[in-house]
Image (cartoon, rainbow, N blue to C red):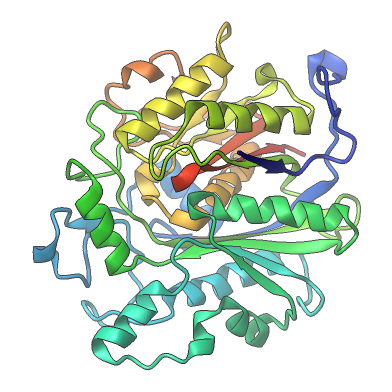
Length: 403
């Protein structure tokens, strides 16, 4: 079993976390998130997305370009940006990637990215573009399949790296970016995630799920499975104290593992380990967590496992507020964990937590959890946990702190 991750520079290696005033764990983070960028089915900026989530607005719609007669599921959370309705286009994931990297760089006050590495997490990369080339002869050059080509021409960065770690890809990339900074390889790293829906991936999911979901309803007894979403997200991660722009939040730690328990089914032990390892590396305790951005994929096995683990982690107290944004964005695949982190950063600033849309009757395993329901709630938030769990037991948990 592979166990790996990154640690805050002076976090304790063993034993209990050191605490400061009021019982809070002291800040050990050496990283600040200074720039945010995001696009999704419900908005074209991080702020638009957050406002939509707080309003309970869903990006769910009928499939726009696939032949729906081939599939049981007929809906997804697509970005409606095609020039001609019903006619698909190549390189949409790349286009969104450039957009969010530009947003994040501008937000962080960066003049350019000529010396800044860019790490991209993805599940499908440009699979849809390859499908259009194969099926319809849509022009596609081999070098366009690599995000680095567009990033070099658009931002000037000479160093870009793509990681395909399933649904945890962008948080894996965030952990590696923190490692790069701690190792002295860079003071600034851009971390991103992007995915467009591919028909082969959509069709595969449609075949393997036992039931046909009409919407993604995490932690509700009506949940039937996952529906795919589209989107991209980026953050600028900088060594603490080196940024010219104010930080949105601090990164305390990222913990990762690959428990390899099963090809698709999550392992409670693997998830419990990665959650508790994140606390150890961040120097926090379960009672320090104010908010959990749940993975919340809407599949019965994932929801029940995540709820079971968190019920044990937060046993004996009121526990933190919890939400699952996939209920409105769909599952945005490789970038989904990082999108949740960006929403956590905005929750810190706004003092508000979006609800889980469609949550009417929680599953039994989640009955003791403080899931936000119906409407957004006001809250004083300091520390957030962000979950991302992928096929094959590829798990990541990030801990971020308000500034």
